[in-house]
Amino acid sequence: MQEWCYEYLATGNIRRDGVHDTEISPLIKMIEDASDLTTYTKEILDCGYTGPVNTEHKESILRALALHITTKRIPMLQQLREGLQIYDLIKIIQAKPHECHDLFVIGHDDKVDAHYISSHLAPEMSPTGSLKQVNESKILEFFQDFLLELEDTQPEDDVAGESDGMSVSQIMQWITGQSHRHLLVSERQKFKVSIKFDHCCLQHTPNHSVCYPIVSACTNTITFPVAHMADYESFKTLLQTAVKYGSAFDRV
Image (cartoon, rainbow, N blue to C red; front, side, top):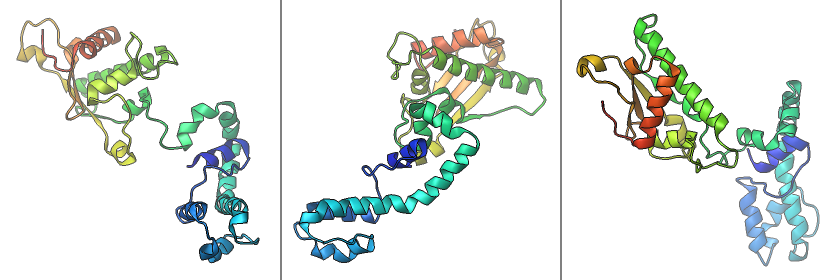
C-alpha cells in the first residue's frame, strides 16, 4: 500500500503528493519534463481534465492527473476503511499511526523483531506425544520467550542493537549473518530457520559438562542440546554465551 493510501485509512483525508500509478505516473513524469503538451492531449483528456492543454496550465494538469489516480482507488479504500471501523481498528491506527504503519506500507520495516524470527521457525520435531517431542516443544517455547524478553528490554532508541545488551537483531545476525529483515518479499517468503534438537550429546561425548547451541549461518540452522536446557535459565545462559562468543560452538 502506498503512503497516501495509508494516510487515507488513518485520517480519511486525501493527499495529492506521493501517488503512483503504473500507467499515469510515467505520463506525469513526461508532462513535467515536456515543453509542448499537445503530444499528450488525448491522454490528459482521458484522465478527466477539461481545461486548456498548454504549459501555462501544467500545474493544473498535474493536479488533475494526481486526482484521477486517487479517485480510482478511493472506493476500494473506503470499503477497507469501513471494514476496519467495524472492529475499531481505525481507532487503533489513529492512536498509534507509526506502530501500525508497517502493517500496511511495505518497504519500511527492515527492523527485525521477535515475531519475524518466530514466524519463520521450521523445527524438526520428534513424533507427537513422545518424551522427546515434549522436551523439544519446551525448548521452542524457551526460544520464543527469550526473543520476546530481548524485545521488551531493548531501549526504544536502540533500533540497531547498538547498546551493550543483547538484541533481537544480534540473534538474527547470529542465525543468518545479517541483522536486518530480508529486503525482498520473495526472500521473506522463502526464509526459514531450521531448528534441530540433539538428544544424544551425552552418548556422543560422555562425561562432558555442557554443550552450547550450534548455528550454521549458511543454512540458517540452529541445533539445541536438549540435555543441557531443562529450564529457561539454563537455556538463556547457554544461548547468550553462544551468541556472544561466536558462531562455531562445540562441547566443553
